[in-house]
Image (cartoon, rainbow, N blue to C red):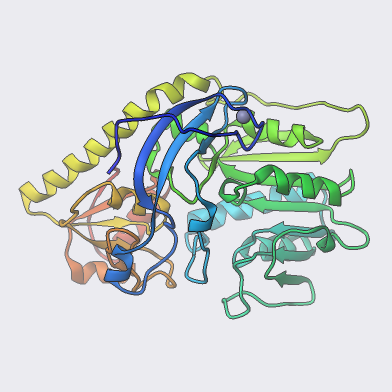
Length: 400
Ligand SMILES: [Zn+2]
């Protein structure tokens, strides 16, 4: 359970600017270290390794990070699955992003390198739509994983980024989505890319938008897997301090993500383009209130569960991703929650880290009989409503 005591860690250095002055934001003594790892049995899930989170914010660059992070605790094995491409809403977002990148940077027929490509869905989409040549890297990828393989246009390697993958002729787009926040040394990756690419290459990164997390109180996004929590300011700082010109920065996916585009800066060039962002003004003010907001949301979750108990109604959680796992682990005994619905077949039949809830296919809902669905991400509310209506079920959807 979260603790309200919030002592300062003894030794910290910000992974973006190396500043040593930090303020404490949140202390969680024991959370599952891998939210997106699915466990084969309830017992194994309940014994899943836990780690300590001491979320702090750098006073110099605004970056947030877990000062108690132990990278060795994390092992992204083959059971790790954080793909979101099963959702029609997410696929539509990926389509829109691919089309936008291809059009704005005229990438048709060009060469694309994706770092941390997972199952390669986005890279294959880019290459298919743009007739591009792609190289996908992921240290967690194995040839046995569905979608991992080589075609004449797209090759996948079970590896981290190194300059050898920027082959003769270079690359035109380096793409990296939802990886940077996991890395213990994010600046090291950006520096290695800087050393490998030409000035013409577009470097595109997408990360969770921490300002959104803070301002909207999206507390279920705070997970051990994420060492770093980027705000617009700290993300720009990271790229500029490693020798890039930031050419674009924007919020996307209903404000939940941040997209940054950068090019290797020429000699003496230090321009930066920063479009106005709805969340940007919050800064340290939002951090100050976040701990309070965090415990208010936990209390609200507890009250929802107490309400279920009092009425004798059962519920399911929709979404076995980070948000669902965080939510369930915030409830000491979620006895009225029968399971977690997820549309990703690879997750179904497995168990949730920490609490041991079973992951079920949407089709099991009819037989299960709970009247309530707890929706973990408001972005998917309509999709869930539509899916359950098509199954002939009228369920009450609650956003905890
Ligand atoms: Zn910093």
